[in-house]
Image (cartoon, rainbow, N blue to C red; front, side, top):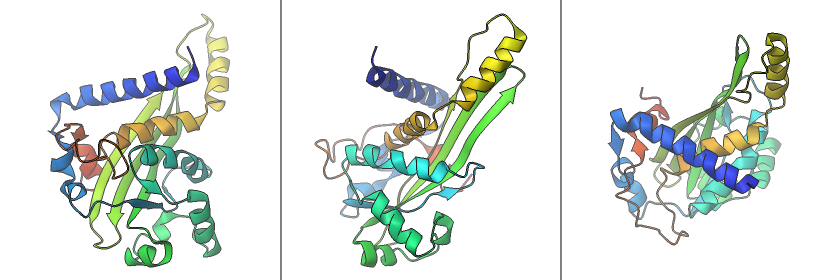
Length: 233
């Protein structure tokens, strides 16, 4: 089985688990959750600003930048080159999104020509140890705002937990060593991609997607996660 098949299966598993947990929660269709995305207010271009990093991982922001372009581009949006935008922000001394969160959105429209801004908050980027078990957790919140109206167009909070070592060797000492090594070597990039995938599946298709405008009835939005990204619960 190739890596692509494994990644697809992982993403589907995340979605199945998420939807299974959501079966007892309130689900919304895309058009119910994000009505502005089915009007002329829907953006064509996204400017990704430096992530707001609430985790203890100093390199999390740079790693996240490497995973954001593809899922949003695949959803039908033009993502302004993140490397160039990050360099512009760095020249202004801006390395964290919290430094610009209070700016009017028109600033980004005037300086970058973007009609929307994507704010990403890294809530968790952690490794947790319990006896001889461990897991790696990556959790992020996404908020997409219009640069013309300052309105929130889309928001979602997503989290993935990975257990890097699930097999026992029969020796407690060996298991401790294996757990420590496998967790330390864990690549966060694939996990971040899974988090992105579980969030972007709720994003209405953009104007550059062949199915643009046809997904409003898809009931895939967990209301609690939509509100959580906005700090409403």
